[in-house]
Length: 508
Image: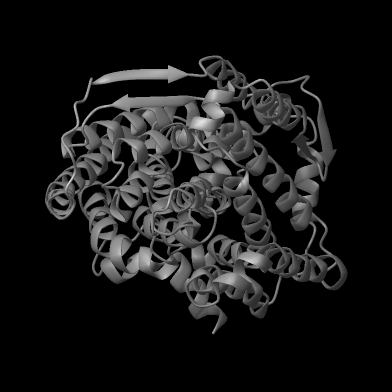
């Protein structure tokens, strides 16, 4: 049963592959790796970051592997996220913080006291703190910016705003762009706003849009911190970015033209005169956003001298998170009150994300570990290709947070070539196609982790916040399964299949 679960998670794409040529054998890749390491060993020793030897030593230590049944708390949490708002709404909204924390504690305690593995919980906690500090600061700082658009909502106007948001998401992140534009988007369509407006906003602005820079989406930023060059994503991802956004924009235009007109016909509104003017209140909060974006680069693993907490041979940032949380406080404290009131700003969306993702980060450790260990094994490595990486990374990114999923599959892809994700020089070589098909495999991982993050509400942090803001604005949003059945499967999945067919399926 365990192998079935792992194979399905990693190799979902094999169902689509049939007779594709296999990659080089594991033995051949191992030979490539040994040659590379022999040549680069001295260089790595001279340039390796402090603590790398300790990390390597620790990597040789044997941790007890989590049993397959330990994924049950994670599955239970996902099922409750899916069914709670639909079948027991009052109980769920009152108790979801206790449920999420309780399930996370159950898994963490098993790691600490049964497996005697402190390593995984500490890493999960560090990743969660980084995750929530970035999301909270972007959410609060953007909440102090009020954008007013006095224009008639037409399919063209809506598509234009979505495409602008997709572009901006590469500059201030999908979270920043989502929080900045979701309220103006709702106000633009006031009186005629429907669930599909919000879902396409999640597809285009909160996910697919942020594919071009490491700032755009958390998985790409983690890759940058591991050593992938800053402009690598722009160079490799832009064709798939344009293709997917073009298909989504076209689909939205025709859906909005049909459903939007139908809603107009049902509602009799007195004639309104539009000025077509654009106004902005809270300009100073763009300064706070700039500080947040600059602070993300203060990583001790990239910049020497940045203060860090050293644990297990690795450096964990804390200065960056202090700056972000300080900006969150100051940006709210000194925000223009007209912007706060105009946005009807409150902390409930970020509170919901904070608690839900405590549960997700705490309970998903066994699932990621089981999949990662299988992928790094000789059996799993022999099955890795750009196709299986696309579908494996994508499938899990839809139901796990896409940032750790990205790292797990990158580590697995590199391990299949005999390379180490914790060696910055080998990461750079992997991105530069220094191993067989390695740059192409990295592209498959990067594109899938970002694009598939839109498959569910929990695939990417901004999804939940956009949903929460929409519901507070009185928009009836689909349930967890309703989102998947009504929008992800009939609209997004065919586009993801086309992306695979055009850019990955027939290559290699």
